[in-house]
Amino acid sequence: MSGQAVLGVEKARFLYGANRVFDSVSLQLDAARTALVGENGAGKSTLLKCLLGELELDEGQIIKSRGLKIGYVPQDVPPGLGDKTVREVLESALPHTDGGEDWKVDVLLDEIGVSYETAQQTFGSLSGGWQRLMLIAAAAKLAQPDLLILDEPTNHLDLSNINTLEGWLADDDRLPMLIVSHDREFLERTTTRTIFLRSDGAHSFGVPFSRAREQLLHRDAADAVRRQLEGKEIERLEKVAARYRVWGVKNDAFHKRAKATEKRIDRIETERTESYVARERRLELHDGEIDAKVALRVQGHTVTIPDGSRKLFTIDRLNVAAGDRIAILGVNGAGKSMLLNALARAYDPDQEHYDGQAAVRFNPQARLVYFDQKMAELPLRTSLLDYLVAVDGATTKDANALLAKAGFPYHRIKGPIADLS
Image 1: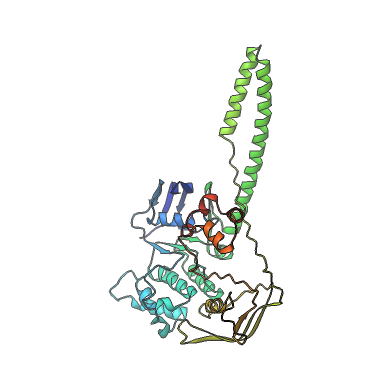
Image 2: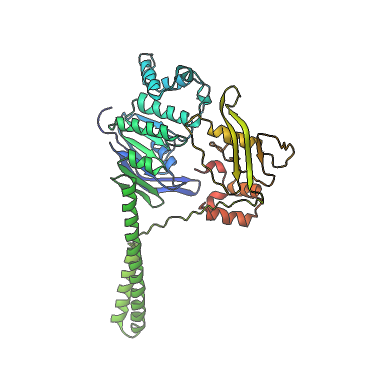
């Protein structure tokens, strides 16, 4: 397809049951590199699925150019790819399946620095970061779309691969894109237009994220001042109307003035400026109550791939003190997730198998909470409220208060965890 890509929605509304995900959303994508930004739960991924035809709007319409070819990389790796080889996954993105363009896969693998042996591995054996980079590479470099949609493209990517991705996007600035991301620096470097998705609709600015955010905040502040002034004017007119009503008991002229003033109040209230107020979110992390100074000791521990056939690295000595907050950095595939997984497996809260000579030793008073990349331990069919009560031992009242403090809407906390963004 030649020319500018055109995709958008007009007066879009989407409901999840009786609850509104977004409403009155209108936007149109053109040749620009567009960032779609919003709070968790604002409906960004839902809006993408509506644009792609995977979900249907409750109201409004999708606007799409005839013959538009869309490339899409979702947040999660699509099912069914794990048993295919890396090369097969990339080849499946080629527009033609007659084998005449297989050389493009070779060029791409060489560009990324993927060896022949790695290309023959199963896709599921790669780290989350490498899986993501491969899918983006397939969509951007091989599929030849008219419009590329990326949902959280930097998730699981190390700094080197983020730079690689930015280089790809910069190489061909003719490819229109819609990028959903919480990575502000990435959006600043890769997009030229920003759309904020909020409960009051979509707000578009023809500038990168930081300038767009300044303009949006400035507009919000001006709307708040205007609404406050309108409120004061309503209060003043209500007092005037009240006096006219008293005087109008014996004077029709004042009675008419009271009616006119009331109509003026109604008009101001009908046209009153809407002022957006963001939902407050506070998540507080407290240190556990450990008397000893050391919470974890690691000594002579070797981290391997899941089947144990290949060594990744060895930790000679590591002491984690109570109160430490540690970041683990490394290239994709280095074994960061494998290390955390090994620590989680070694944790024995009941001390049934405590070994004082073990390579990984937790303080007996330590309490471990572990969230893996895919949050595999979360019971997706359980409600958020029930999960918190069961795990933390909190009362329903305390759990409700904690979830409200963290910014979860009340109608969400009794639904299954799987329905959250």
